[in-house]
Amino acid sequence: MSLALPRTRSLANEPSHSAGPEDESDISALLARLTSEVNQIACEKTKSIQQITNQMKMLALNALIEASRAGAQGAGFAVVAQEVRGVGQQVETIARELETQLTKRTGDLMSSISRMTDRSRGERMVDLSLNAIELIDRNLYERTCDVRWWATDSAVVDCAAAANAAAVAHVSDRLAVILGAYTVYLDLWLCDLDGNILANGRADRFNVVGQNVAHTRWFREARGLRSGDDYVAGDVECQPLLGQAQVATYCASVRDGGKAHGRPTGVLAIHFDWEPQARAIVQGVRVGAADKARVLLVDSNFRVIAASDGQGLLGERVSLQLNGQRSGCYQDRSGSLVAFHATPGYETYRGLGWYGVIVSNAQKD
Image (cartoon, rainbow, N blue to C red):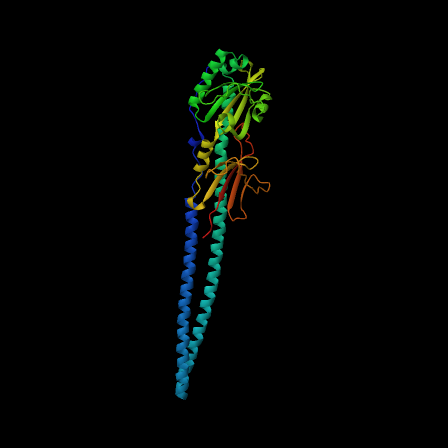
C-alpha cells in the first residue's frame, strides 16, 4: 500500500483570524479624552463667569457705598447698583448650577465609556481565547487523522503481523520518510500488543526499540480500541524515552489487512512535538501591548500546557472561576482580567476539556 505525503502543516503556519485591538481601544480612548476635555473646558468657563460676577458684585458694592455718601442725589444710582448686584448673583447661581450639571453629566458619560471599554475588552479577550484553542483543535484533529491513516500503511500492517528483521527495517524506513515530511512529529513508534516497541522512525536519535510502554495510559487505551476508525488522544506529558521532550501522543490500532474491523495486531503511536508548536500559537495571539497579557493553554485539570511567557509549563495550575460557563471573563482578586474559553473540538476531534486562557495585568489610568 503506497503512502502519499501531503504538504506538511504546523501550528506555526496557522493564521490568527482575530482582529487586533487597535481600532476599538483607540475609539474608546478618543471618546474618553474628548469627554474629559469637554468637562475641563466647562469648568474653566464657569470659573471665568464666576470671576466676572464677583467683579460685578464688587463694583455694585462700591457703587452702593458711593451712592450712600451722595445722599438723596445718589438714590437713583443706588437703585441701579442694587440691580447690577442682583444680576451678578443670578449669573453666579446659573454658573454654579451649570458647572454642577456638566460635571455630573460628563462624569456619567466617562463612567459609561469606561464600562463599555471594559466590556469590549473582556469580549475581545474571550474571542482571542477561543481563537487560540480553536487553532489547537484544528491542528490536533489532523493528528488524529494522521495516526489512523498511517496505521493502515502496508509496511506498518506487515510488521505488526510478523515482526521479522526485514519487516522491521522496512517499516523503520517508512516511518523515517513520514517524519521527513511531517516536521511536527518527534518520533513514530510501532508497538506490539504487549507494549514492546518494534520500530521507530528516528532510531539514530532515540534508541527505543525493545522498550516496553505497556504501563502508559495511552497504550492501555489504544490496546482497547474497538476499530481502526477510533483513536486515542493523550494529554501533554514529558516522555522519558524521548529525552523528556513535551509531547502529545496519538494512537491507533494496527489491524489485519489494514481493515477497520480486522483483528488487532499492534498499536501505532505518534508523538506530536508539542512545546514549539504550542508556543507558536500562544505567542501569536494578537493581544495589545498595553494589555500586558499572558496567553495560556490549560488542560482539563487547569494545568498549564502552553504559556506565552514560557513559564509554569506542565507544573503550574491556574484557578479558573468557570461558574458553570464554557466561556467568560472576570476580574480576579489581584485586579487582573481573566478571560477563558473551553475547547469546542473540531470535526471528529472532541477535544480533551482544555481551555484557552488570557490573563491581562493592565491597570487603568
